[in-house]
Image (cartoon, rainbow, N blue to C red):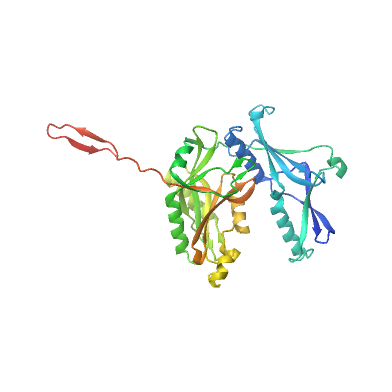
Length: 374
């Protein structure tokens, strides 16, 4: 999706000694912000349950002390033209922090290093500036501007289920940072066998990465507007290019997954993906392995790229299994928060055992006999 806004954003790069290197025009990736805001509105019951918003708008938040053109964050507004656009129930607005621009800055840094403008060892600081297109810096401080994009919406498949029921039959693994701006992460419940299957595949892969696709359903709570995920299964990824430090999916991978979904006939959605990190430090001393950053769960740049390109919906999650050598395996889940990828909490769902199917008693003139109708 291409979003062209009313502002030109620039990154101002300053060396450690305080000298300004230059201002560089950039085009931030607004799609994660767009997805986050819209899904937030769906979770609140404010926006229609569709996969994409009809209209979005993004505006800069000026720095509280420096003022414009320096930006502290952005506000994102999602709304639907099917409702009255002046109604409070027709739109939702949320603020995203300065950290949203970190990926854009990282991409610019790589470019500047390749050009020789910066050295990999240089220490620099950066600021975000926004100028209204076609205006001077002073004019951009006065007149606000926004941009909007209109899209065709597709229904978001939601099934009504009791969120409390899932909580009661789950074991929870919480992250301290799973709530921001009083907005908790969307609850996600993994069926227990998924962890067992993924762990077995990860161990069998040895020193190579492996992975798969997470499928399941989106539910809306029967007593509130909250939406939650039920991850019912994982489909092992085939036709991948597996290496020790990367896992590349191919077009054949996606075709095979879609074929498996069709065969299952359960109306399941692509909810995310999973992969493993082998023990990168297996040849290092045991004490060093305990403190090495490579032995800790992390999402690499390649991992972030896969998640952004294939699983950009605000509800998409990623399961990561990390072989930590003598410390055992770690299980972590990542997902979208304020348009950024972050480690998040999750729950393992243990469905209650179904009761024995009812039996019918038939009288055939002799002793009663039971017929199992299951």
